[in-house]
Every structure is written in C-alpha cells, then in structure tokens.
Amino acid sequence: MVSRFYDRTRSESISNPFRCEGFLRDGAIPRREGGCVALDGLPPFLRALLVTDGTVTKILEAYFWEPVSVTTQRQEFVVAEQPVPWIRIEAGDRVLVREAALRGVDSGVLYATALSVIRIEHIPEGFRQRLIDRELGIGVLIRDSGLESYREVMEVDVAAADGGDSGGGPDALGADDILSRTYRIIIGREPVILITEGFPVSSYRQGGT
Image (cartoon, rainbow, N blue to C red; front, top):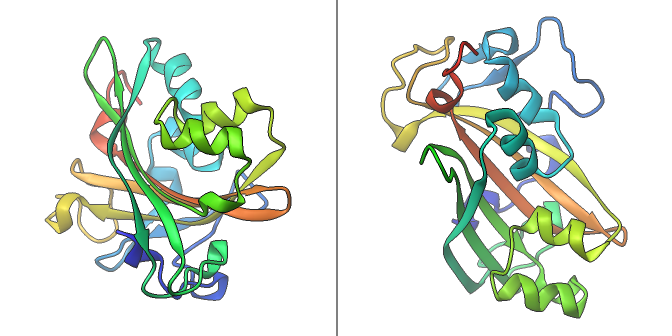
C-alpha cells in the first residue's frame, strides 16, 4: 500500500485543485482510468470534505447526525522500498502503516476509508504510543494532544471501486466511484503523516445530496 506514494513529488501530483481556494468555477478532478469529473457534479458535502482541514470524523457526525466509529483494519511497521518525498521518507526507512474504516454506528454506512503512512520517530512520545495502541483516530488524537499542526492537500482524484467499471463514464460520476484526497499533516514544521481518504460516492447520494 505504501508503494502508491513512491517517488511522488508535487509536480507529479495527479491534481491539487484546492491549494488556495474552495471554489473553482470550471474546476475538474481527474479519473485514474482516464477523463475527468467536473467539481460541480459532485455531491455538495463531498466537495466540502475535499477542502476541510478539520477532523473528518467530527464533520461526518455533525452532517449525518450519528456517531461515527473509526475501526483500524490493519496496522504494521514496514520498510519503505523507495522514497516517499511528500513526507521525506527515504528507501530503507521504517514507517507505520495504518488502514481504517469510518462507519456510522447507527446506520452501518461506510463513510470513508483511510490509509496512513507515518514517520513514527518524528511524533512526540506520548502521542506516538497512543497512536500505536490504536487508541483513537489520528485527527482526534492530534486534537486531544494539543499538538500544533496543519494539513496540506497534495492531490484529489476519482476511481472506480476495485478498479472496475464505475458506471458513470470517463467524465461523469458513477455510483460505484470512490472520491479520494491525499494530504500530509505537518507537525513542528516537519511533514510526518501522509493520509489518503476514500469516500464512496454512493454513501453521499442519500438524503438529496
């Protein structure tokens, strides 16, 4: 899973349309299979999630009005085979990889998935242990720890789930599409966490979005 970030630089980014603005009149995001999807065709709440620099779990709970659980599905230390420039990982560095799912506790709806790559040695000790112990989601941990940090969106894109047919065509949003954003978290002026969040489009087309 770490391999998706190997040798990536800002200039090679698929797309970073929201670096400074939250509104792009003719904006579009690329589809991994080719083509692109107009931003005005996204469910409005999904557009908001792409630009937020707050805790996603908290925003999901407020919008869907139910508690959201963060379940860690995989967590392990791995050795990077190639550099990950976005968070200054070199080949041979040991990093923590975590995969999580965010689901509505009442509805059971999958609202998001998250793949995180973490330079664990650059995180304060107390925060580090809580992270390893899977105590809370990363965003909640940062907030509760009082760490000064900010998030920088590196890219956004759209892909069909499991690489299949989205049903929407190359320039339209399909029911089986996954909208993704990748951002890094900078703590103490050092980029230490890289996260890709995937949002299943079907989960955001309910309730008239």
